[in-house]
Image (cartoon, rainbow, N blue to C red; front, side, top):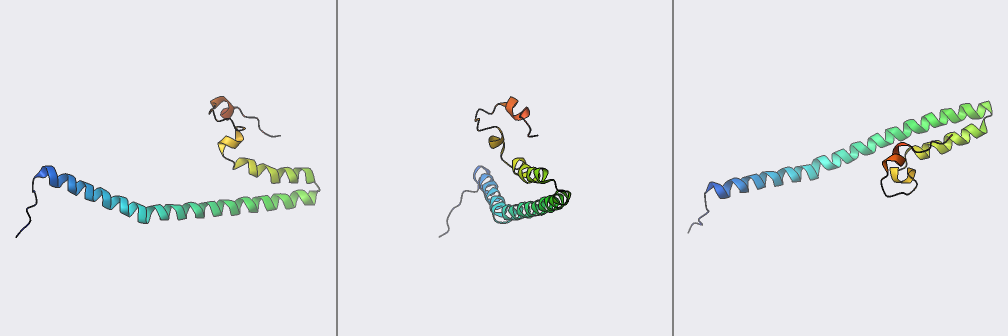
Length: 107
């Protein structure tokens, strides 16, 4: 006994396309997504190391110079640069473009 499989193009072509799309999605989820996450983590680590090195050398210079106020300001400033946009807006969830583009900068 043989099982009859419909061989019409209306059935086989969509099945082949669905199988190919499923294969691509699987490869993407199993290989490319973890690789992209790993690269993003490495970039973040490098950026953090560069920021910390810059901050360390700046603080050493300022403290040797005796400028504690500017040193404390340098420590406080980087926290503001990496906050999400919603926090910088002051909690306004309206998405007001004017506030995003004309926010006050600390002095």
